[in-house]
Image 1 (cartoon, helix red, strand yellow):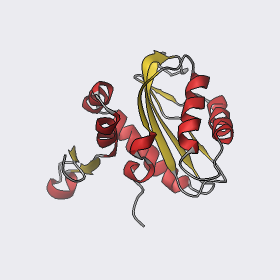
Image 2 (tube, rainbow, N blue to C red; image 1 turned 120 degrees about the vertical axis):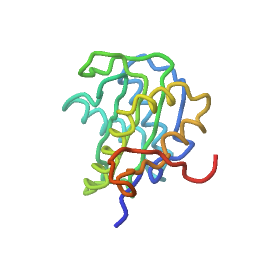
Image 3 (spheres, rainbow, N blue to C red; image 1 turned 60 degrees about the vertical axis):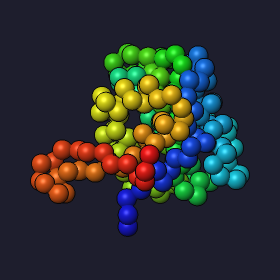
Image 4 (cartoon, helix red, strand yellow; image 1 turned 180 degrees about the vertical axis):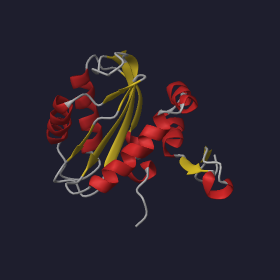
Length: 173
């Protein structure tokens, strides 16, 4: 089975830049509304409740101004993601205490642990790259942000054995 990628769960319509939110709760409400349109029958309040329940277990703020809220939703047919860049950072109870302005939310169906972990791993690699974070913070449009988020990350080790990462565009610019 092929590993699920960020490109498999994200659409340009679910990439929103420079959104105004004053709190973690309001941000989760916004993300819930964005994701609700991904599948017929999904309700924003159900998505919100799922993400809020996960936040109560511990913050999904990972540091450096980044949060990756996530959860499992029984009614979901396939994994889905949304990305929001806030115009101003908010308190997300991150371990480093820094305000969060980059949020990538993931929802997976019950039993979708493998896909969940694969996407979380890809996001962790992507957001740990300072050049990527700078580029996504400076993206002038949601189309550019979508391209950056869905760019395939390949290991050069496959060809040279060096183990460094290199990014390759999917398609032409």
